[in-house]
Image (cartoon, rainbow, N blue to C red; front, side, top):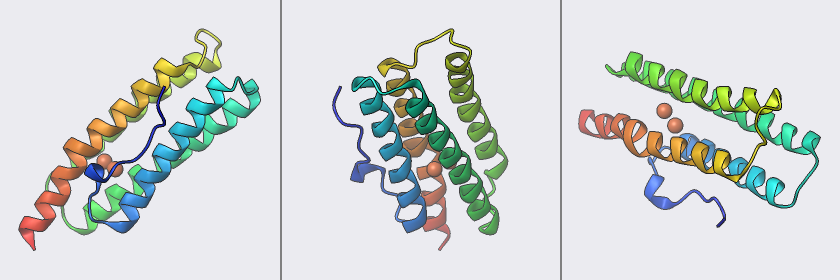
Length: 133
Ligand SMILES: [Fe+2]
Ligand SMILES: [Fe+2]
């Protein structure tokens, strides 16, 4: 599997948001290489925990930014964040319950989920912001 990397087409123009998005990609990549290198379950679990914490923090910060800007689609965006997080958390929970080996396809799925969200809904917010200014 190739390296998971944030690419400039995901740029929003907001430094904090972009750096948080980059961090999420870095953790996904770390998780992917930990799996490939067959790191211990404990090490993989730690990375998963870091990743989920970062995603939650990012969603919260992004929602605060949207709220400060009085973004009219904040409620919808929040629901999408919840759904995205729930999908990720369900998979991670299965892994915790040992029903599922945390594996590359799971990381690919999570990466796709986050990428699509940035490309679609996050960008919609920044486009709205630009048009408003
Ligand atoms: Fe985001
Ligand atoms: Fe978002």
